[in-house]
Image (cartoon, rainbow, N blue to C red):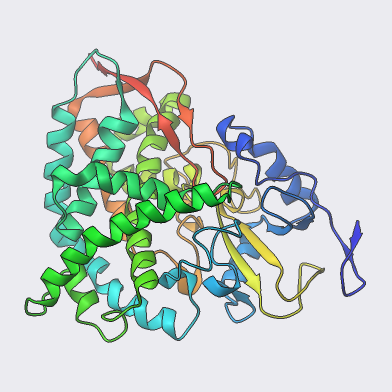
Length: 411
């Protein structure tokens, strides 16, 4: 126990779950299980990112998300990740905002991901997925992350943004820089970060200007440049929103695509269930998003002194919502560490957030995943890991950097 500024005892966390090694070595499950059992809200006084509160059960994560007036996402208060440095106060994208500005900007972007727009995109997604899978070598080792997950998600971004496919490697590099969460806040890294981000801004400003000089249309960038809420954003806000759209459309979906292969390696019976009953595929997409939890956490900042689960939180405190833990909550999900494509409540996950900040592109991610699963089944192959995958060193995104696999025909 420790004493807060208000004179009340704080429950001290039994582990610093911001340590990147927990995720690289895939040993985060036990520390979070202990926190859920013993201290659903706890305080970590020292970490590479400074002191923070952990919220680890699904009900409390949702409670915080539904109270944005007390638990703010605003960039000037700290933003949406555990770090305190580069990319937070300087990076005011619309999910790092509170109402009314968040509401106005979200309304601009939302129609690009509505059901009719997603239905229109579905054939294009399927054609690209099918073509890519049919070009993969059978019986030869290749990297699933590089050859499938990244290509499919970057390809989708190129479609959404009308971005040249020949420049896709730039998109991937910018996404990696924009999503990196690290304790390294050196001036050298700061300079490298903004060098990459302003390269991205320069290229995307060319796309924006092309839309600005054309009549308003129904595509995402035209909506942005011709809107009152986003049409004249300051430079850093424009930069931050581009980075958000790239990271949201790339890193999270690609890590779920790779997570599915790893899940089927660990639970081959679940792949057989999908082969026997393809109607389970939409639920399997929800289950892999829950099981993988591609976004490990989101951060909020207290705007006033408040109480949460008996703990006193002070104005200005950093509150980390561990989605990866909420999605393994034993009180919500039976046998939560298992990948189960028949799980009846898989959709209850918080991987896309909850409340006003729920991911606008959630439906696009679900469609991409379901189509990938369908097309893998149509190939009549198993995707077999031939080496242990390498994992991302991040407390923010939960994913893979490499996954050597082979396609094995099913006889």
